[in-house]
Amino acid sequence: MKIKINKKSKEALYWQIYSQIKSLIIDGSIQHGSYLPSERIFAEKLGVHRNTIIRAYGELKAEQLIMSRQGIGYQVSYKTNEIINSSKNKVEQSRKLGPYSYDKFKSKDVNWDQMIKDEYRDVGEKFDNDFQKQGRDTKISMAVGIPPIIYDEEEIAANIAYILKENGRKESYITPYQGDDDCRKQIVNYLRSKGIRAKMSEIQIMSETNQAFDFIMTATLKPGDKILIEEPVSPDVYRLIDLNDCEAITVPVDENGMMCDNIEPMIEKYKPKYIYINSSYHDPTGACLSIERKKKLLELSYRYRIPIIEDDSASDLNFFGNPEPTLKSMDKGNNVIYIYSFALSFVPGLSIAFIVAPEELARSLRYLVSVRLMSLEWVAQKLIARCLEDGSYVRKTAEIRRRNRENFRTICPFLDELSPYGLSYHSPKGGVYIWVKLPTGLDSRKVVLEAERRGVSLIAGTVFYPNKMGGKNKIRINFSHEKKSMLIEGMKVFSEIIRNHVKKT
Image (cartoon, rainbow, N blue to C red; front, side, top):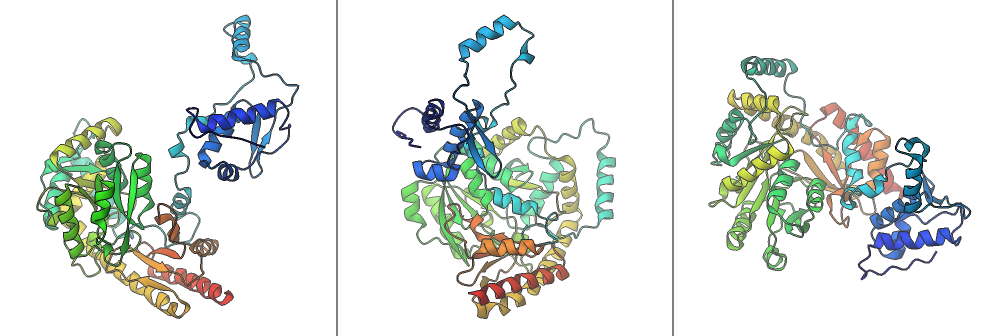
């Protein structure tokens, strides 16, 4: 099958491909029952994106020229003696049959392949699937970053009952678009313990950090704008950038966080609109941005007037309770937008986040909430406000730190014993992740799949690289959620997999 495309033509590439294949099918050059090339192979052959082939095939399916069969591919389903009525003939036929004759037409399904935008087709399903395995497909989860169950169920139930009783006289549980007043007031007080001075008018409540980052980009960026981000980085970060039609410019990370030595030439070249930084116990490496590098980033921010988005969700999880200062607390101006989430230190499943931003931006975010969400989760805001006010959040966070420290120390001996096999890892001072480098020649995806078959979930390092050019020998291990006994069982499985693979090589 010879298909020629003209990338300089104003006609869409998928339409060029569709039109030529259609002609070949109708004139009999491609016969009924023949199979078309797979999306991936055809895309590589023509030098186009896979989504272009999907759209072309979607048009052919819509006209019933081909059909797709699960696990087999696309097959031509057109016989040369069949007649495809023109739109004009169909209209004329409908007139003759009358207004109530719709049931006499052959049913055709909506072409959803054509309806869905290209950018929403390939959205990192592997990472999402791994995330969803938590508590479902594996018995031991060392993949997902969620807190342990520290808060007593009866205590939470009593707090919710109190909230409903005290606030039940209100006509509505709909909170202000900027967030519940009590919650924002308690957050202002809480931020003082971090050395951050903020006003209630500068705080916008969100459901979680991804939503916060997405709303900031929506309110401030245009298609094609660039953002400096770390690499490796959480896939949620670079996927959100892509979906906002912006471009991520990656900067390497080492044990001290984002490497800042060569950032200035990148700023000169790319003119980024933001620098995005996961400053404390970085996902996935567990690194903390050093004081020296924080000062360097702030200096560059002031010099080039580039705002910094600081994701600081794990800063309270220092193993020893003495976290380093945040970028926001060091900001002498108003250049740092601060995002904090309670997802790693509160009740699992009750995720509340907030943004500290200049009042001008906070107003825009409030408007976006009013348009997109109508209201924010009321009970969760009241619950976190109550726990902040009575001090239980601080006490429980200290307990989570202690448990995380013990879990980390449980895992390390297993990793140390694998050192002679060529395994190494970064030893974080807090957080919930260990970033492991596998022995030479081991593919992290194969290790993850084998662990999964044996009931242990892990995350392969490749998903943390936007261009999928790294992480083939890296694995992220989470130690925050499972009990110590389960972590031991999981590490036994992991160790056995590594030893067996190394022996085979």
